[in-house]
Image (cartoon, rainbow, N blue to C red; front, side):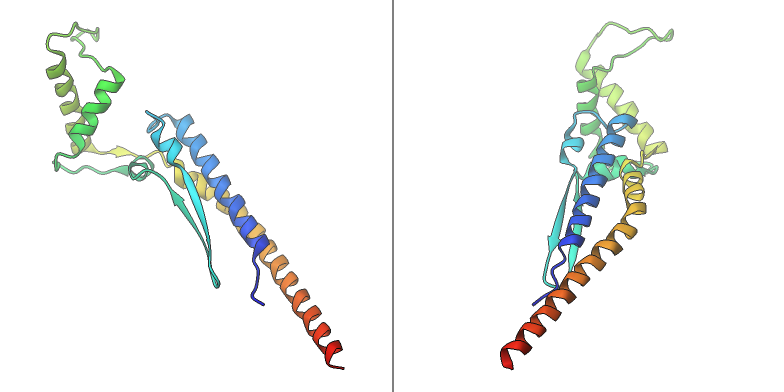
Length: 177
């Protein structure tokens, strides 16, 4: 008979759901990093149960870590960022403005969009940007509640295991007499 950790699994499952729900809420309400909804939809978790261990893995798009943690200045780039920024500029419909802050008419739309993307990319490389902490905050808030619940759940699982073991021993002893 191995130790069945049903209550512990249930507590960790609830913890995983809680983290994902809070992270998704923070991602949406903080607005930075919420563009297409791809990151929002990718938030999920896996609860892995093996003979001697339980693991909880959180999944999200790779760029979710950059949104969460931010990015430091890099001084220059490998050219990976520009195409993604250009795609974002086109999707958002960013337009050039004149010195008074008014929108200008497109003269050469593709070239002007590339110019906007270049300026945004250059700013990110020079100064970086601060992360939203959407995942860190969600995890920390949920983690505060976890130790008490997990301890109680593990104690319940251990009690059930001991009761089963005692019943099995008592049952075995009555069969041999």
